[in-house]
Image (cartoon, rainbow, N blue to C red):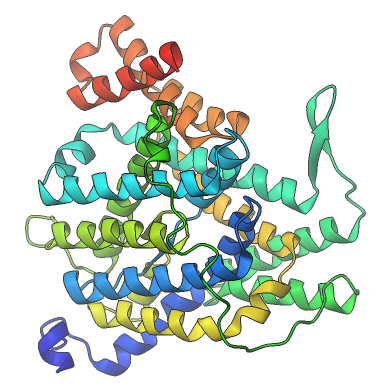
Length: 429
């Protein structure tokens, strides 16, 4: 049955290899089980319900990806998008988390439509690579400032907006210890380095009396506090259009980039260098976002950590299905997730930020018409505490600079359209 379903022999793999690959992928991304509820609970959502929603959304998305597209790519609520959900839309703009879930829902519906009508390739190919990189770098910086703030490293200051916190305090010291440990383990190629770092720092927090032991296993918490609590109509407010498109574009670029990167590493591209079954893969991602919003979590997207499973030999959807099963098993470990302190999660956030910011090396710094909009996009996200503001500012800057520099022919229709929406947002909203 597995052979017929996943075509294992055709891909030069077997059940044992695929299962081991799935375990490897799961260990590299399991941190989201604790980090996502921690971030969304700051928006007023129930931690236990979000924990369950996170596990189910990840299991659903990974299973659909494996069964529909037969790719070894796992999905879960995305880092950066969950921070934008909480700190940008809810705490920053003052909307309820129910409305924010509505924005995630509509972004997923639009993504489904784009996948169904095959418009996605046109959008992906028409957006300049520099702006895609700028968005990635900006989200990284956004995660960094949130992580540093949650750990108490950076605090608000009445004169300079931000300042240094008490670096001698226990939370700050354990944060730095966690960040250094995760980075060193990752550099050494240790599978699950982020999870190991979080666990070690949590144990140290317990030893120093800063973490309360709550047990290891229990029945899953109730999902009722977030299940179907979405405000679909409230999200259609004109002021939230930019937010919906921010969720959409980040998910679209993130998913496309992840799929291509994973496919290249696993030699899954066809003879023309294209990704077979791309439509099915994007459909799996978009439907997972819709399902996740209904259960009570931010945008679900493909994880670059899937490359760990590729490195372990994963080549088919059985790897993704294995990840899905492990996320379902994780439902019974909620006490462990609730023990993790903010500074342990913060160490993971800043580490992920490092990985995202590293893509800045792909920018052509000799061409200011390309590099300047990247800097604007990247800097505006953390300083405005909004991914949407960064995207809008970046596209508007890109279009205006290109036109004034005599390079208007390099601008695609889609860039003009997005820049126009961004400009309209600043003028009318």
